[in-house]
Image (tube, rainbow, N blue to C red; front, side, top):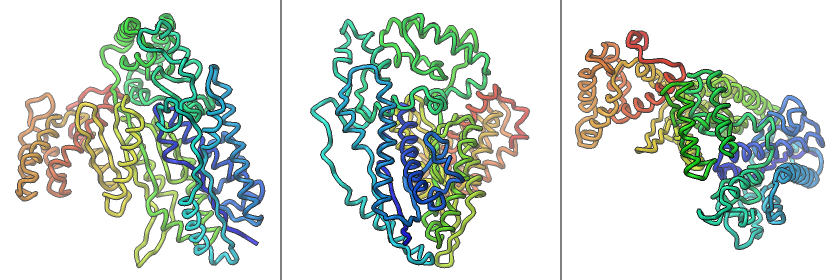
Amino acid sequence: MSYLFLCSLGPVQDFIATARRSRDLWYGSWMLSELAKTAARAIANQEGQEALIFPAPENIIQLQPDSSLNVANKVVALISSSPQEIGRLVFRTVSERLEALKQDAFNNIHGLYKIDLANKQINDLVEYYWTAVHLKDETKYSKVRSRAESLLTARKNTRDFKPFPGDYLPKSSLDGSRESVIEETSYPNGPSDPERENKIKRLYQKYHARSGERLSGVDLLKRLGKLNSDLESKFSSTSHFAALPYINRIGPQKYNELLIAIADHFTTSGWDLAEKDGTILYESRIPDWVPTPQTQELLRKKLVDELNAKAGKIRPGPYYAMLAADGDNMGRIIDAQTSPSAHRALSIALSKFADQVSGIIGKHQGCAIYCGGDDILAYLPLHTALGCAAELERTFRENVNFTAEKEGTTFRPTLSAGLVLAHHLTPLSDVLDMVRMAEKNAKNKVKDKNGLAVILDKRNGPSREIHGKWQVLDARLNSMISLTRVGAFSKGTAYDLQKIQRLFGNSGIPPETVSNEAYRIITRKRESGSNEGVDIKIKEAFESWLKVDGISAGDLSMELIIASMFADAMNMANGDEIQKTNKEAAS
C-alpha cells in the first residue's frame, strides 16, 4: 500500500528574519535547510532514495550533514511503510540533528548562562507537521496531492500551542519574545562601571554578544553554531559587500596590506577585531568593537592614515544590495504534474537550477544566504547586483522548462526578483522587510509577473522604488548606467525630471504634455562637467523612454537615480573616471 507523505518544518520567515548580524541570517537559513535535509535523508534511508519526490537529489550523499545542497522546508515522498512510523522516524531524526547542532553551539560558550532555559527554548523551536493520503492509483496523483496539501494546511492552522518556557527576564534583542539566558552580571553596569571595558570584551569572547545585546538560547545557537567552520568562512558582513567595489579598485595586495595593518593597530590597542574583512575599512564601524571614545579616536586616526597611505583619498561607498527571488506560477506548474515521476522531474530541474545559484552569485562576488529550489536570498555588491539578478532570471527560465494550461492560457515558470540597495548600517531586519516587499511588488505590480523591482533606501532621504518586466526594465537601466558612467548627461537631470513630475504630474495636464516638457528640459541639458549640449543619441534615448516607452518623468527620474548608484559602483570597482570620448559607444 502506497501513501503520499508530506511533512513541513518551521518556523521559516520569522526564524530567519530575527537577525541583527549577517551571521544570524546565514545560520538561521542554513539550519532550517539542514533540518529539512535530515527529514529527507530519514525517508530515503527507510524507503529508498527513489521514494523522494521533493527534494529529488542525484544521490544520497547530497543529503548528508553539512553538504552544499539547500532544501526547502517541505518534503514530499511516496512511502510504503506505515505513515505513523515514518512520521515518528522523521521527528526523531530531526530532533537528534537539532540536538547535535545545539551541542555544537553550546560547546563554544565559555561563560555563565541559564542552560536549562536555553535548552527549553531550542527544544521548543522546531514546528513539525506531517500528513499522508493513501494513493491507490498513480493516475489520481494530482487529486491525492491536493488533498494532502489541504490536510497539511489544516494541521498547521490547528498547531499545538505550548506554554512558552521562560521567566521574568530581559527579552532577546533579536526576536523580542524569548528571554535572555546570559547572566545580567556579565553586562556593564552603566558607563561608569570600572569593569566596563573588560566586560564588553568578555561578552564578545564568550557569547559573541555586543554590550547592548541580550541573547536567548536560540540566539546563541545562531551566534555560536558551526563557529569558525568552513561554512561560516564563506559568509561576510554587509559592510564587506558595500566595500567590495573599493576593494576591487585598490587590488588584492593593497587590501591585504590594509587588513594586516589595521588589525595590528587594534591588537596594539588591546582589542581584537570581530570581523577581518572589508568591515574594518569604515570608521563608522570602530565603535562596534571599541567602547572607549579615546581609543576610538586613536583608531580612527590610524585607519585614515593607513587608507591615505595605501589607497589615497578615495573611500569605500556605504551601500550594498540584497537580492530576493522566487519562481512565478509554480503552484500551477506543480498542479500540472499528474504523476509522481513528473513531479520528481520538476524537482530535479529545480535542484539543478539551485546547484547553479551559488556559483552564479559567487561569480558576481556575492554570497548566497539561501537557495532552495526557486527561492533565493543573497548579498551582492552594487557593481554586480543587476547583472547577477539578470543571469539568475535567465538561468531559471532556461532550466525549468515546464508548462501548465488553464482556460486556454499557457503558463511557464519565470523568476521575479527584488533588489534593495541599502546602507551597510541599516538594521538587517529592516532590509529583509524591504527586500521581501520588493520581491512581492515584482510579482504583484508587474503584469504576468517575471518582474524586477528595485528599492533604493537612502539614509538621508526618501526610499525610491522602480519595477518592470525583465528584458525591459533591466535593459533600460543598463543603458542609463552606460550613459551615466561616461558622463553623457549631468546627474542633476534626474532631479529636474522629479521636479517636473512634482509640479505637473497631478495638475490635470495630459501626460503627453508633461513628457514633452520633460523632453524639452533634456534637450537643453549639458554633459556632465561640460558646456557642450548633450549628444543627439542621448536625446533620442530620452525621447524613446518618455514618448515610446511611456515612462513618466517621475518614474524616469527614479530609474536614473538608481542607475547612477550602480554606475558609481562600477566606476569605483573598475577605477574608471568619466570618459566623455566613449559617449557614442555607450549610447
